[in-house]
Image 1 (cartoon, rainbow, N blue to C red):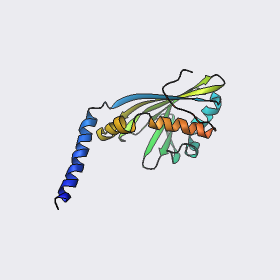
Image 2 (cartoon, rainbow, N blue to C red):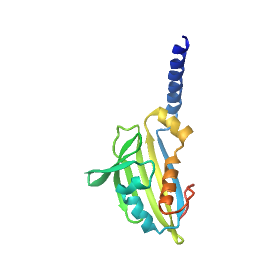
Image 3 (cartoon, rainbow, N blue to C red):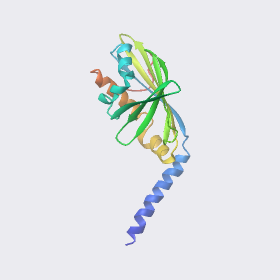
Image 4 (cartoon, one colour):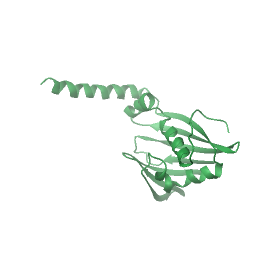
Length: 176
């Protein structure tokens, strides 16, 4: 019967330890990833900025809904299996660069994602830069030491490649 007390106490202790360690990790981080594509920038730009069709090729996004504009910027609600984030398009410079921000400060995470599409040879380089904030210290610990800051960007770039019939290898920022 002691295990009925020990198991919950250990679980609470583990969560408390993760929260303590996570509180030592900075709330903000910046991470960037790039991938080379055979497609021209205009082709990749069209795919990346057709937000309504994102669920057809990005596996972590299950649904996208258009929300009312915020201060003249388009907002799209991106939904995954266990998350939702309103993404506001705050910069839009076709076919080179756009930037989205999470426009809900109540979420345990936030920040911006800048997408740069550059010509390279006969193809393109796509670079994603995440300027993120993780408010919850347990999530900060997990993001820094378990999941990593670049996993979502890598998956997104690989999915973009699959959408265009390419196997891409995301990595550190690649010059254009």
